[in-house]
Length: 355
Image (cartoon, rainbow, N blue to C red; front, top):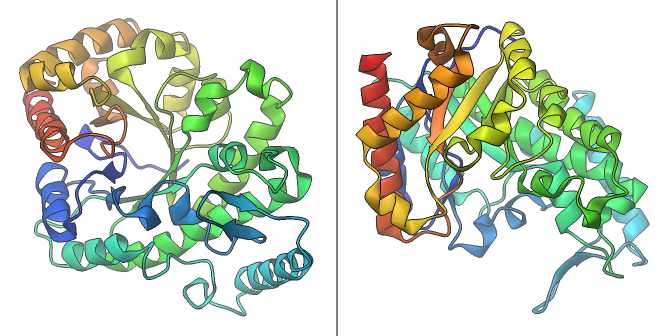
């Protein structure tokens, strides 16, 4: 842990539905200027959550019908060898990560590069910059091999995938740190909502912590802060035990379930950790339309008072807090995604004055 504090700043989860890069980045910088995140524009196939981070994965096959890994291909062993050769060359300092095959490509990294150009001239300068990668647990559960088996059941990919994502994070961190602000990388882990379900009953907590921990370690080694976002509920002990600096949860829909882990959370604060509260709804269009900054501020204040009672003041809790939408906005209309961000900005202004 380091000494970074969220101090009640706004940030984003990542995905947005727009196609115009400039106007979307302008929107982000206007509504979350202190900790802006580069937006993933999900209407571009190359910027969808899993697709954006799998360049360089050995055995990857794309057809019109599916995306999968062919570990039975005659080329697979050679691709694995090239992967590890590049990985070790970067680790040993013989190859810069920007010169390797681990970066975001021209299509997958187009919005990232536009964001970098925009932030370079931003005034005032951000307190921190946020990027993201798909979480290793989600990628391992979501991507399958030629036989339809999830990669999480293949020991080879339990080693390859965290290394690949750690390099994707490192590439972002090294580029963003040139702008002079701390860099936060979130692991987007919707797959963790399924941890412990019947579909993943054989996947142990130890395995989940192992793959999460390797990417967190890579983020820290590159000089970044590591966060995790889960867009529903999970066994939050996995996050508290994995050395994250920031844990992001859906406070709008799942506060009561997260509050069960109150003691773990205060221990986390004691180690310098931060909570990112997902205070603005994103899954219910009616709630997006009906909520106001004032109603959301009243809702969070009630939650925060219950959560902090007897442990710390609301001011101390806010110091260890960031605020975000409850999830990404990529599935919303453009108008509703803009409303979500404006609600977030209004909420933070109110909380900044009240607490």
